[in-house]
Amino acid sequence: MSTTEAPGTRSRLDRWLESNLSGLLPWKRRAEAFYHEKRAKLAGDDYETARDHYEEAIGVRGRLGDPERAMALGKELADLARKRGDDGTALDHYERVVELRARRENARGALDALEPMLDILDADGVDDELADWWGHALMILGRAEPDEIPNARRDELIRRYADRIRSEDSAGRLYGFALTRLLAGEDETGADLLDATWERRDVVREQVGQFLVVLAAGVGRVAHAELTGREVDREATLDFVADHREKLSEPATALFDRLRDGETDADPEGLKTGVGPNDGAELREVEAEVFGQFLERLE
Image 1 (cartoon, one colour):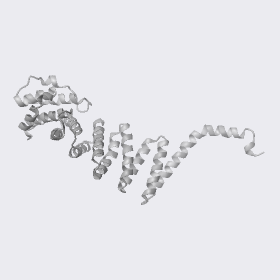
Image 2 (cartoon, rainbow, N blue to C red):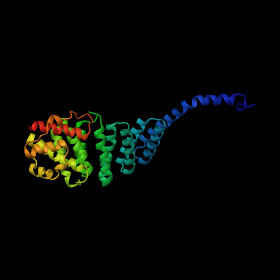
Image 3 (cartoon, one colour):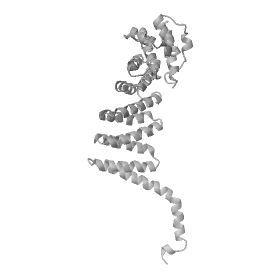
Image 4 (cartoon, rainbow, N blue to C red):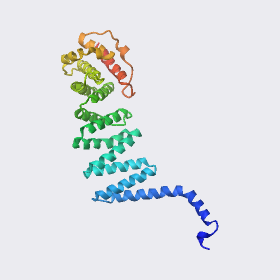
């Protein structure tokens, strides 16, 4: 009688496989992933071979439930594809890494993949998509933990955004960062961002919410100039805002009246909310705190 026909042999083998297969499969997949990763790195100038092995390795790592390694490999492939001029592959993998990192609230990792995406889209002249992804970048910055992103990197990203994107949405984003930086005592950066917000008055329609932000930025920049001696077009700014005074928030109205008429009935302490730059507070609360502080210093 052959071994395969021996009584009980097959059932013992089945039981062994059932108890060990769950351990064998991950081992096999790890070996497979290692093989493809090694082949990708050894491909040298053969970009197509490297790309194929990277994609296989990424897929296997995903099936292994190893997202960190899959994201790291995705970033490596995207960087290689960008270097070789394969923008389509680069964008696909950068985008996946951005989404996965952002989902895990890893702002630094998300921006590491997003910044080269922005460079590619900018070079390719894909303006609508570029604006959307810049919006993602600013959203990631806004949600980052304190000190997660170095100040120099944060400020450079915001500066690039202000220089590159002139849209209605950009006014609100820049105003939020302006107030936060002022609240953090970074006066120069905050003032520059108030200016950038104010400069968007020519692209923001009066009937949209961002127009209120532009008006408030105008009031804020004049107040800041009064306190620091910074040169701004004071009268022209206040004249423009005066035509829309009824749209100002309570803190902005109080500050405007103080600047325009030399007095206001509002109490700075009553306006201030006590929020800090890292509290993740609503924009209206941050505005009230900053404008309350301005009003207090102007008295």
